[in-house]
Image (cartoon, rainbow, N blue to C red; front, side, top):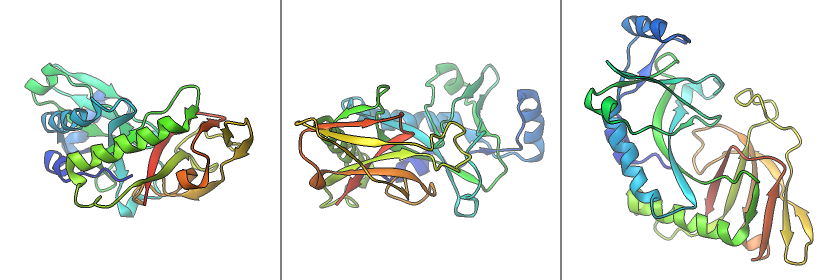
Length: 253
């Protein structure tokens, strides 16, 4: 599910890349040697842009996502730290195991045009946007709702910049994304992930799990992915997972 929108690239011309330091004081000093800052004001506008398309689509969400450049795809995603730094602003922004972050919309940081900084050297990661289906805490999904979520995500993509690219595309299925068993980007990775489908007659079957790209593009490397393709399964039923996925993506035909 590729969400690297042209408008977002315009909004986010550059981002902070710096040495890996834990203390804010050290981070600021490192910036003098290796500074590549990103304007929070530009990011604020981009994040607000995406929010326009999720506000009326309750089954999906939008994040800013750190993606590795082609020469850095073997670098673990673990330990990524994003900081918002301004004259009056000091804030750590959580980054998940897929590099996704929710940007806080802060008037003070906007007014002072604070900066965003990542604790990585230059030339390893870039920011883009990412739509995905909302994960459920109980990891139980009604397949009718998943079909609706896929339609919501596809329409959000079309309306926010990918209309031409998605001409003729239809929702074909859902991807449940987990870390590889040896993927150091997720220290809590469960090597015994199981995802099952229970139909209306209470018959339970496993969804196959394979190593694949988590979204429509290959910018994130390989993860464990369980694909639920609508045409291969009954129209009614539930999908149940032994643990919460890192993300839920879509599959188009």
